Length: 144
Image 1 (spheres, rainbow, N blue to C red):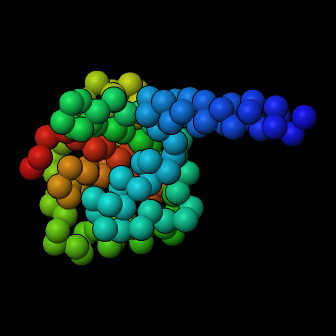
Image 2: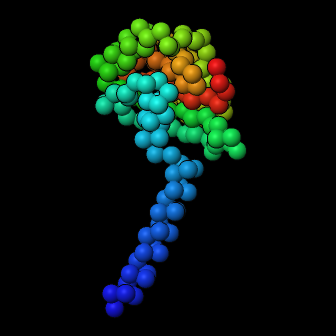
Image 3: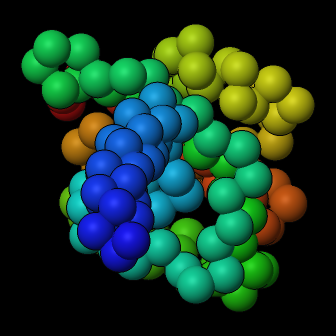
C-alpha cells in the first residue's frame, strides 16, 4: 500500500511545484520586488517594508521586464532610506517616474503632486511620497 501512495504523492508534488512556478512567473511574490530592489540598489529594503500594491509584466525573450510596487515603510525607515539615497552618489535625482502602463495601473490613486523626491539607480526608480511612509519602486525595461 505504501508504494501506491508514493506513486501518487511524488508526481502530485512535482505537478504542484510546476504549477506554483508558473503561477509566480505571472504573479510574482513580494520577495520578487524586494530582491529586485536590493539587487539593483545594493541597499536592503527596510524590515518594516509592506508591499501595498504591485504588478510586473512577463519578461520578453531577452528577459527584460518592468515592475511597479507601492511600498509602505515606518516613518523612521522612510527617513533613513531617503537620507541614505540622497547621500549615495550612485543614485541620480530624476524629475519623472511612471513611463509604463503598469505604473499607471498600480499608482492610480496616487497624485503626481504627492511625489516629493525621485531617484534612479540603473533600472530602478524610487519615488518618495509626501506622507513620509510610502515609496514607489519602478523597474524599467530600458538601460540608462
